[in-house]
Length: 122
Image: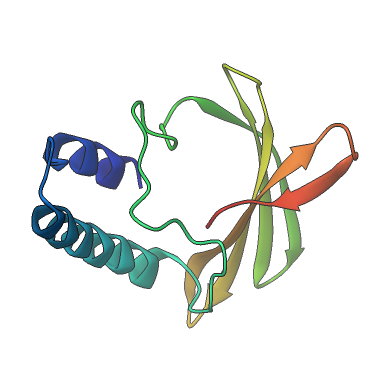
């Protein structure tokens, strides 16, 4: 995802026409679909990002520490991370094993106010 966000930012057309923007958006979404097809469980994702990228990228390797790994079953693992900067949010990545391959199913963030995990965009 980090590579995709960097690519999107570098190739984001400056002051595009509507046609240029739509073309870029289609390419962006195709690359994003490819990432989801390869690394995520196949399911309808109501809150999936739609060619939404940030600078700096939202996903940055090395800026989250793994603080806990919970093996729920032989086909489900939850990885809890702590961000090293900003609000230092806690995130939970849920991985499911499908056909011998671990796939990301969802990402959640810990809401300190409600004291519970909330669904994130993924």
